[in-house]
Length: 283
Image (cartoon, rainbow, N blue to C red; front, side, top):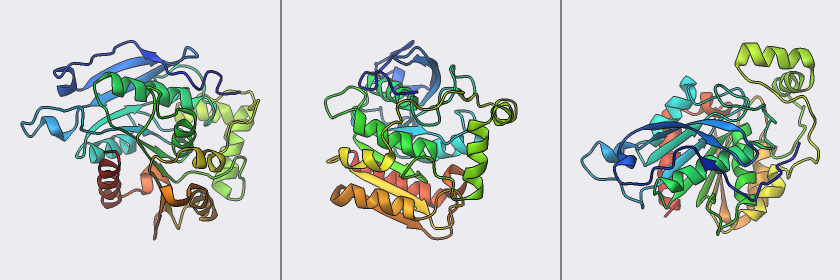
C-alpha cells in the first residue's frame, strides 16, 4: 500500500459554500482521489446558537478518529461536541470503517481521507482549519500536514496529535500485539470486520509510508501540539517525547498524568484545553 496521489485532494459529492449552508448540520459522502467514499458530517458549532452568524474566520476542527472508531461512535461524538464550543466540526469515518467504503490501510492511505475532509471544510467557507487526530488518526494528521503544504487547498493551519505512535511496527505492549494480530492474520481481520465494523486490507505496506517522527519536522512553521497520557497502555512515553524532539520549537508536548489512550481517555477538561489551544493557534 502507498498513499499514491497524496499531494492531491479530493472532491466531495456536496460542496455548499454559502453562509446559510454553514448554519445547518450536513452529512454526505466525500470521494477521495483514489475513489473511496468517506462518510462525513459537518456540525456548524456553537457559533450558530448564540445568534451570531458564522464567519470564515471561525475555525473548523477536522477530527481523525482512532482505529476501529467511526463518525457515529459515542466517543467520537463526545469529542465533536466538546470542540463545537470553539468552532465548527467535521467528523468522518476512515476508509474501511463504518459506512465508508474501501478497506483500512491502518494509517497509510488514510491521509487521502483526511485531505478530502479538510478540503470539504474549506469548501464550506472556513479559512482556518485545525486537524485533531487520536491514535491511528494522530499519526494520520502528522503525515497529512507534512504532505499537504501551505499552498494546498487541503492544508491545515494547526495540528493536534493525541496518543500517536512515533514509529511503525511497534509491538512492545500487549494491546499493540493484539492490534497486530487483528491486522496481519486472516482470523484477526475477520474479528475486526464482524466485531468492530472495521474492514482491513490484507496487503502489506509497499512502500512503507513516512513515519510520524519523520513527518513532524516537515510540519513547521505550523503549530503542533502533541498530547499523550503517561498511563497509555499502547504507546509508552518515549513515543511522544520522540515526536516533541523532532518538532523542535514549533511543537508543544502535553504529557497528561493518569491519562490512558486516545479518545476514551481524553476527559472533558482536556478536550476543553485542546479546543482553546487550537482556536488560538489557528489564527
